[in-house]
Image (tube, rainbow, N blue to C red; front, side, top):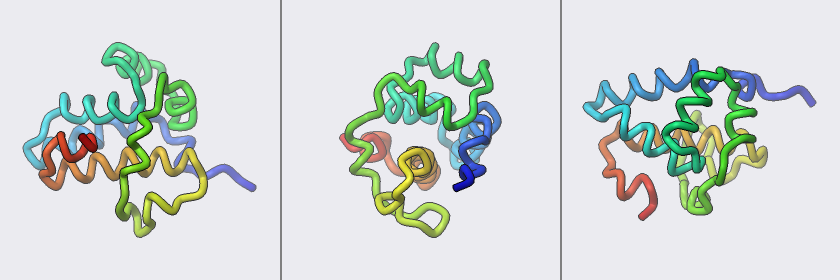
Length: 116
């Protein structure tokens, strides 16, 4: 089976789009970074390194230090599909991140977004 083309997208190319989406709704790059670090376990330096390396999403998530176990609490619809029902693990991780950024842009508090 052919790999999903989303896997080959460069994280460094999508990251500014996440930031721009958040900023349009008066949220900050620091909040976007906090969400990404919460989900993946990257430090801020590790996140910046991933952006600088230009890794695709597959490498970005494969190299993530520690995916947050609370990510299973993320539910909802992204691109017309319920994230909790996605069978492909990598696609599910990408959609979890998309969902978290959507929640940030919709004005949810970081406490709720980070499932605390």
